[in-house]
Length: 484
Image (tube, rainbow, N blue to C red; front, side):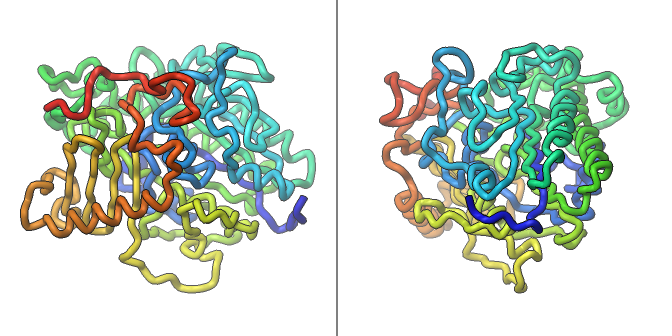
């Protein structure tokens, strides 16, 4: 075991489920009530341009954990099969997570909340304390959870239960002098939002809200209606106020839990020596672009910024200067090397990992970084791939097209697809060359998402050559060459 530096902080890592960058008061939303998270943003470093590696939960979480892109770790869709039972599948078997590096230098690890990377009953990746969801989401009351190795139905509101267990784990973790890593993975604000899934005292906070932050839009022509609220269909564009109230209430419930965790850090006397990180697995559209959902809110899947851009806050009062709003583009695959460098733990020197540390941006590393306009973001969702610069974006779909090109300087809302504009031809070809060159460098051909039949309706088995079945994905009944 490597020597553990006593100066290394405790870590609380909070991740929500389906929370877009826009769904936070500190990020400019005038409607949502998030006072505790807003305080963290004011006192820490908040990132304006942090992007997930895939616009759906399981692959996005796997990339945060491992530093790998989906076409390296092989999780290409949300995991539909293999979470529990005799056929449980450990989807990241043989792939190292940064949590194992933390364990190996002396951190004690606990997880309270969502896992959704397969074989949920079995603690993985260095965790010794484990309270998690049996699948990935579902009803907020009587939620299917795993506690002490047993499948249970959790009494009460699951957001509060996740907070309660996180605080209980903290009490156990602080019984020794070893630093700890506490992962708090809320299922909120993932659907369902209606039918009394959230406490009245939270929903009623939005009783008179006009939801100006989610303007009503005509449904997207590629929208998948199974992901939309009941009140919103192609024929019926009613204001989905009930669903918005539930979504916003779910976020406020998380904020309430974050406030309780922060107070407990004070009670334990470890407030100043704790690194607190807040993010979400992927973005979300609550009517944005005429979509209810994330990447799989449409078919073919989309790569709108609202689906891939998520909040990211680093808070550490003794080492990170407060009030920073960082505009640099960074990605989920950059997160692992960043955390390792910040903690002064050797970053794994694995050439197949594409990420680069952005610890310098936190003020932890000496220097005044200059904005690098050559930085680009790459995303994938099965056979859909994206390259995004500060000024434009190309979405390329294999094998049949429906490609998109957006001029983000003049069209930041991504409303005008210029893929067939002859004036953009050279730039599109340049971006496509960079896109394919980057993926050629990093893809593991055994689990290449470009060759997988990912539909957005769930993954049934490991990918590529590791699959036991012909198709590892649940079909939506569409193919990529149909005219939708």
